Image (cartoon, rainbow, N blue to C red):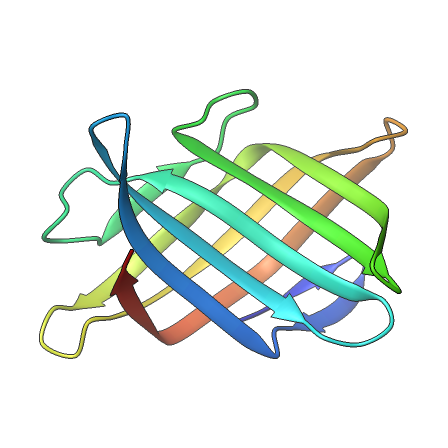
Length: 133
C-alpha cells in the first residue's frame, strides 16, 4: 500500500484487511502503517455491499461509521497528527475470492485537528490478504 501524503511518498511497512460484523452489517477494516519516526497509519472502515464480493467503490463520508477513513501520525507513541477524511473514495478494483486478496486505489481529503486541509492522493494497494475477525 502506498500513496502521497502532504506531498511526500508514503509506503506501508505492513497492511491489514479484515472483515467483521458491526451492528449486523458486514464491514472491512483496511489499513496500512509506515513504521519509522514518525509512524504513519492510513485506516479505513468500509461497509461492504456484498460480503462475498468485496470489489466496488466506497465513497468516504464525515461522521459516517459506514465508510470512514483517517490518517494518524505517532511519534514515540504519542499522537502528533490526526486527519479525518471527509471526502474521497476507496475503490477495490479486484477481489480474488480464491486467494482472498484485494487490490485497488484510493484518494481522500479532509482536515487535521487544527482545521488545516490535508489530502492523500495516488493511493494504491495490491494483493492484500483478507482475513476474518
